Length: 105
Image (cartoon, rainbow, N blue to C red):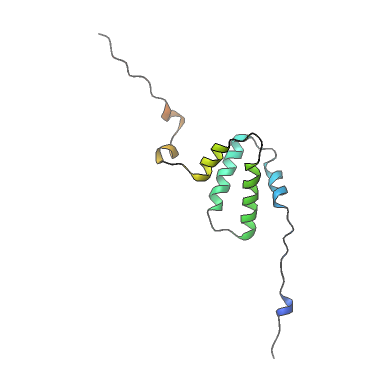
């Protein structure tokens, strides 16, 4: 007996509003938290994800990029990554070097 399952093919219609969900997600976040979230999103987008997960991540990325008053250069550097290992591993103490003065005497 031969079964014909062609008529039973189900197609999932995605009716979620990813942009609205992303806006709700970032609503109460401060600027430093937005940069951290953007860095997480960019790193997750580099991995293999499901189609739904990619849509969610891209929506969050787009909403963060359109936030008023956000530093676009900082977002670009997060997206592109650090150019050198020195920049990637820098800490605030790395920039502080006391002056070497000659001893009198």
